[in-house]
Image (cartoon, rainbow, N blue to C red; front, side, top):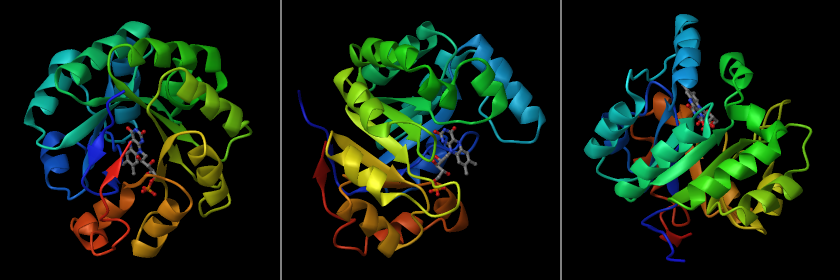
Length: 247
Ligand SMILES: Cc1cc2nc3c(=O)[nH]c(=O)nc-3n(C[C@H](O)[C@H](O)[C@H](O)COP(=O)(O)O)c2cc1C
């Protein structure tokens, strides 16, 4: 399997309604995650309901065309973060990712009730048979990442072993702890199984380096970038965070 090469250890994490190509192109991270996008009718309807509650969402009437338009404009190594109620939605996006040499990131993370109700996002962590089938199908088409959320009553070691075995190249872990802070033990345990991108509360060089020292290959940020448009440039002052890496 050909390894993926990245110039530094920094990743822009998905932000629905924000991470379009224009926003991603401005970031000094070596990997940018476009979306989250909604890949089929049911996911689009759910996104409309979420948007009506005031949250930002990308709503494309033709999802494949809308996502392809963003991919065509992105000038960096990229992944597309995707929610879909159907296998077909994931496959269509995987084919797009493959055509443009990108990564398909399965969103098993989102906790908005409208998405969970149609079996997307975090709901997949509680229907692991379905999640594994999606990973197997998608990984036949393109390189796969699975975005998961920590802090739930789950056996993460068993879950992540299954995710890697099914063909995922990367597990992108939001290591949130419900009481606050982030769980470096979780990052450390899963990093023994395969490539990990660590996520949550990466706000400065110290927190970013902690993820890498715990075993993550790369570390991602979302909110810190909203607070400081030069966030990744500042993080590149770190010797560790600016190292090239293969996954
Ligand atoms: C406005 C906003 C939108 C988000 N949308 C998505 C999404 O569509 N898909 C996803 O996997 N995560 C999404 N996230 C979660 C982030 O990618 C990240 O996991 C989370 O914010 C924790 O990382 P941080 O502490 O660096 O912000 C979103 C976060 C924010 C703040």
